[in-house]
Image (cartoon, rainbow, N blue to C red; front, side):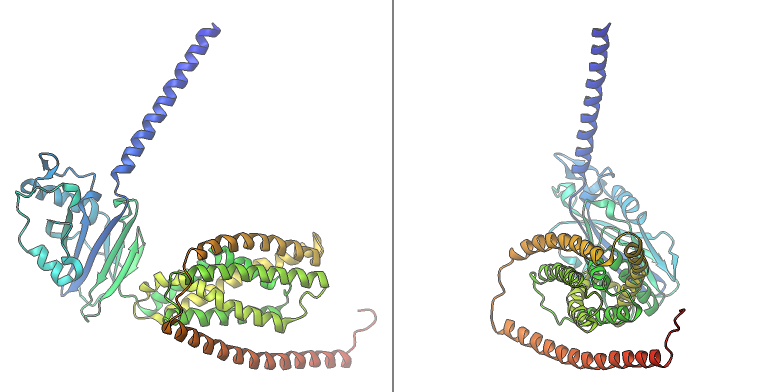
Amino acid sequence: MRCHGFIAISRCLTAAIATTLACAVALSAAAHDIPPDVKINAFVKPAGKRLELLIRVPLAAMIEVDIPTRGPGYLDLSRADGALRDATKLYLIDNITIYENGAPLPPPHILYARVSLPSDRSFTSYEQARAHVEGPRLSDGLELYWNQQLLDVLLEYPIQSDRSEFAIRLRVDRLGQKVSTALRFLPPDGATRAFELHGDPGLVRLDPRWHQAALRFVVSGFWHILEGTDHLLFLCCLVIPFRRLRPLVIIVTSFTVGHSISLIASAFGFVPDALWFPPLIETLIAVTIIYMALENIVYAALGKLGDDISRRWIIAFAFGLVHGFGFSFALRESLQFAGNHLMTALFGFNLGVEIGQIAVLLVLIPALDLIFRYVIREWLGVIIMSALIAHVAWHWMIERGEQLAKFPFPKIDAAFLASALRGLIAMLILALAVLLANGWLRRWIQAQNGSSAKDLAADPPSKGS
């Protein structure tokens, strides 16, 4: 009986393993059918009472459509029209929605659906692409493998006016493992707006109004600060020893001014456009966290927590400049959604970052006060927390430093020296501004402390209080 039971169990296990392997092979084969990298080119042009969407997609991305072939897999162009229109409906029309003034447009009319050779370069401009689509078709006798060709489609949507507000939603991430879309919007005023989109970018406003751009970037800045672990750890180190209102306002404001300056400078191109610059900034961000954590540990050990606010605000300002460049890397790709409202987008992003910082502080400060009051003594808690943060940042610094070391040292030429000289002049101007601001701040703090001392002397506390 035991033998029969063991045999039955073995057979069940064997069948289960075979089924699992078969499913894995099937999934692997299906995954290989999906193209690894799909590039889409598209033009959106409203004109009068119609809007044209001219789009080019690789045929290899349309694996669910039965494309007619002949011989060893050559595309049968004489019988391909129906399949091309089916592919257009299934992959493009069903997955692309265009909005006019917030309302989705009705399904478009397919004007053309043509096969093009992969060597064709007509989609460099709208005029060339449209002339190519309207031109003669490829000869039916060509021997072309179907999955190596391109599909060019011209869709026409009815609209109320070419001056309306248009937006587009591209759900094209199913076309490949990695999908990128080069989209160009051609409004009636003649100004082309280019977008570089990846996967499913959500709703893209092709000509946003200022309030739409502002709202989008406020939300972006808010989530960027909440999702950026390195910025959160730096903010934590910055305010752990200073949890009273006045020091917090001064320190956080100086950090805000610092990262705003570098963020605006990056938006207007006043930073090196080199591959080594982003990993350098990421490494320096880790260094700033380590420095702040070590400084907190020293101050806690010496019993000087919260004493030197004039030093802390200067450090917050200087390190804010570094973190601002880090913010700019996240902002750089999304600036394409700002339209003509660059400054509005920058202000909105900064506002979102500040709202995120305030939200973090509203949770962090009461939590720290409770911990230091009921769980652990303040100086010991500051040391432990700062040591843990320094440990995490140290690993970040090593990893990012290794990435930075892969880039060669910049070539010292006239252009590099000119850029370094401009940076030095900017640093000197900022240093002078910090010196003047620090002198004013010291006098203001002394005046406030003197006023408080006079009030205390004029109205001393009673013995019973």
